[in-house]
Length: 129
Ligand SMILES: [Ca+2]
Image (tube, rainbow, N blue to C red; front, side, top):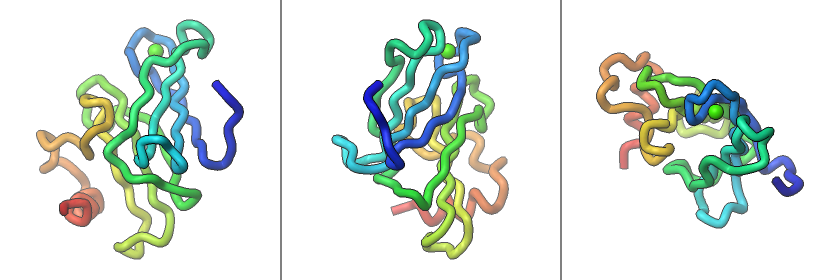
């Protein structure tokens, strides 16, 4: 992995469920895909190869954003929690959850939509085109 800067955030999570924590390197802007990108380094070989490099459905982000990794939907794949801290349309801290089931190409899991806390539901409505 090349040198990084404030455009990058890092989180640990087991992407491929092999028992080794992998390193999620999140490129917020100046990405080739013009989306927030995730580059996941394999913990099985001490982070010497990538398990996934992909542009997510989330637009480019900046220092107003923080990220975390956990299985929100309970499907066994880790989701990425994208937290918008300020300058949001809702004037509140927002959480956007990228679905780990399809390599972060959708927000949350529609199957569990009804179970989402109300603040996520509000955010989900804001995300609709
Ligand atoms: Ca792993």
